[in-house]
Image 1 (cartoon, rainbow, N blue to C red):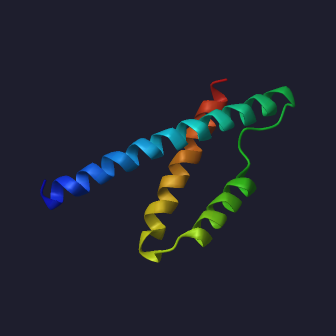
Image 2: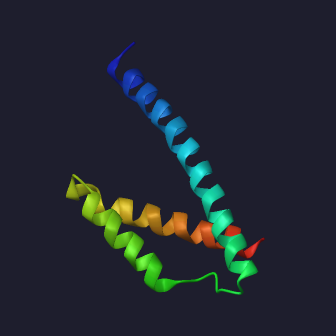
Length: 87
């Protein structure tokens, strides 16, 4: 196996882990959405979203990835809101 194949294999393994974690995250978001529905709370909480982004950015070990990771989490939260709106 050459270096490129090894790297791609590692990416495939990581993608599987990421998928599992995303499914768990969306299940938790569904629970949040159900709670919001039951308690007549709005789906969008901009203050909470900003807190999540700030907390994530503080945990990044390599600042080179900051902008990329920030955008990924914004997308995850956008999709989470869509999920909650569809309940």
